[in-house]
Image 1 (cartoon, rainbow, N blue to C red):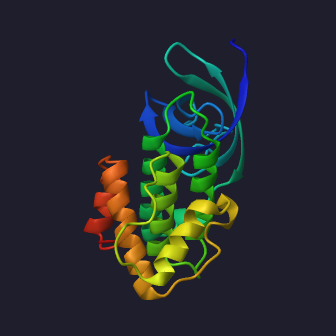
Image 2 (tube, rainbow, N blue to C red; image 1 turned 120 degrees about the horizontal axis):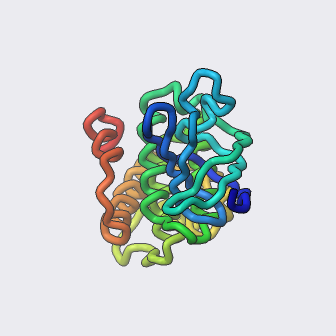
Length: 218
């Protein structure tokens, strides 16, 4: 067997493969976005049952195969169960995972984006933070993490919007959601975040389309 590699990561997608296997997409701190084959995890007696579901976060032990990695062991520290029990939260989390996966490639340093995704899923589980604000913060910081942030728009903005944008791009990720805004500022932030994401990231995300179809966002 090839040498084991231990990395911190989150399952951002999973697909059935063969009769009992799964093909996972894992966003990791030091290997970037990787494909991992989990052999036999769909058997009823698998010790990994439930550990390979979307948003499972923890320590992954993998070894390199020809075209992908293979799973050797997992130690999950957060399953984000509250998200998986709520359809709206699941939709937001799936979009956040898709956006992170789009922005990170294999062998990239994924630490900051993994932390951003983790902190944003924590925020989704916090009733005091509006989901629309979480999405706006996540999109703006993702643009910034990709080195594409153009600064505050050169047009008249509400005062609170400019202050919020400064906080979003300058604060540590652990503190990124430690502010509140009024509804008009939240709406303006959301419009700017959507504009920046379309202009600077440009990917097409089916998960975002589903959110719109279900009425969870504009």
